[in-house]
Amino acid sequence: MNAFLRFFIWFIAKLGSPPPKSSFSFPCRPFVTRVEQVVVRPETHYLDPLVCTTRDGVRNVFRDVQVITSVAKEQVVPLVREFGVHMKEILVYERVTEMIQVFSL
Figure 1 (spheres, rainbow, N blue to C red):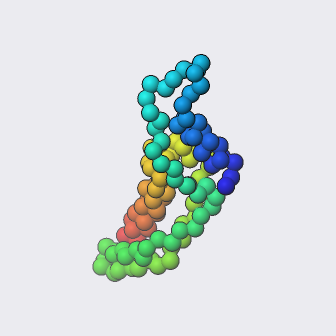
Figure 2: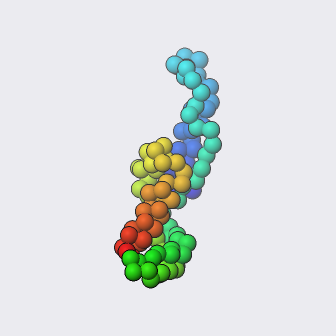
Figure 3: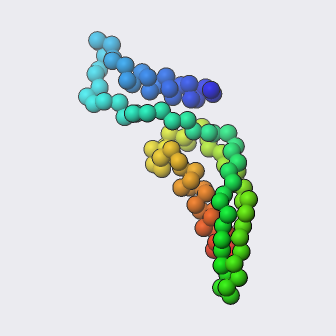
C-alpha cells in the first residue's frame, strides 16, 4: 500500500474517532461511510467490441481497443468526490467509445 493511501486511511480513522476532551468537537458525523481502493498507477483496460456504422451503411467492429489510464495522487480525492469511485468509466472509457464512433462516421 502506498504512502498516500496509508495517510488517507489514517486520516479517515482519525475523523471517526472521538476527539480529545479539550479539543473542538465535530457537530456532525464523518463524511466517509466506506473505503474504496483506487488504482493510481498506469492501468490497461480493454473496451468491449465497438460496432460502428458509417454513413453509407458499412458496419465496422473495433475489437481489443486498449485504453491506458493513470490518476495523479493529488487528484484522487477531488475526482472521487465529483465523479465517484468509477471515475475512469465516466471520464475516459465512455468518451473514447464515443470518439471512435464519431470518427468512423
